[in-house]
Image (cartoon, rainbow, N blue to C red; front, side, top):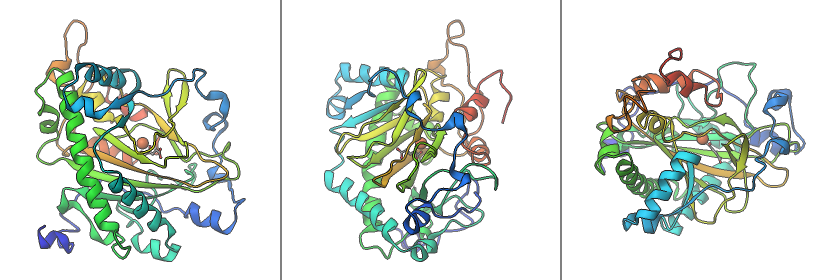
Length: 370
Ligand SMILES: O=C(O)CCC(=O)C(=O)O
Ligand SMILES: [Fe+2]
C-alpha cells in the first residue's frame, strides 16, 4: 500500500465529508453505570414504539440466496434474487465465500472496540464537522428522540479515503480485520452487482461502472446496549439506506433487525455466518423503483447487548440517481425518479433526522425536491 495513505498523510481536506451530527452521550456508558437507565430523549413517540402489535401478522422470513448457485450462473437462483429485490429489498446470503474466520475476526474487532473504556473510545470521537468516527449520526436538534445505540463509522474504500485518526489501531488486529473484511465484502458486492446488472437488462459490469470512478465503502459498527424498557426505545429508527447496497453482519444469536414488509415489521432472524444484504436508495432510483430500498429499524432487548456491522457501498458524488435506460418504458414505466446528484442527496440526508422513506419520496418525479 502507498505509504502516504498508510500513515494517514491523505487525511483531511482531500477526503470529502458529507455532513455532521450533534454530539450525544454514549448509551453504552450510561447503561454500564445504571442498568435501569432510561431518559425522556430515548422514549419514542407512541406511534414509533417497537411494540409487538405492529409485527407482521404473517410468520414470513426474508428470502435466502445461496450465493454458490448464483456465481455458477444458476438461473433459478438469479430469479429468486430478482423477486427478493422486488418484493423484499432484503435477503440473507449463504455460501457467500467470505471465510468464517474473516467474519469472526471482524466481530471480535468490533467487540474489542466497544470493550475499551469510554475515555479510550473517545479518542476516536467524531469531529464536529464530520460523520466518521465514534458517536452518532443524523442528530440535528437537541430535542429530537435519540436511538439506543452507539456507533463507529469508518470509510474503508478507497484506501485514500481512510481517516486513520479514527482507526483504533492500538487494538491488536483491528485494522487487519477491517481491511480483510472490506476486501471480502467488495468481492461479494461486485458479484451481486453483476447479477443485478443482468437482471436489469444490462451487461454484467454496468452497475459497477455506474458507481463512477471509484466504488466507495463505509462501515458502521453498531452497538446496542441492553435496555430495561425495549418497548419504549428503538435501537435504530426506521430508515432506508442511502447506499447502492448494504451488507450487514450481525450477531448469530440475537434478533434485532426488523424490516418493513406489507403493513408490518418482519424480524430478520440471523442465520449463523450468513450476511444480510439490502438494496439501498441508489438502486431504487437506478431501477426506476422496481428494486426497493426497504425501510428497516433495529430493536433492543433486556438481556443481551447486540452488535452489527453495516457495510455501505456508495457511488461517486457526481453520479445521478435517475433510472437507467433499460428500466424505463415510456408506456408502462415512465421515468419515476429525478436525476439528482448522489453527493447532493447524501448531504441532504445527513442534514435531517432519519425518517423512514421521507428521503426517497423527494427523489420521485412530481414530488418536491431536496
Ligand atoms: O443493526 C441492524 O440490524 C441494522 C443497522 C442499520 O440499519 C444500519 O446501520 O444502517
Ligand atoms: Fe440501515
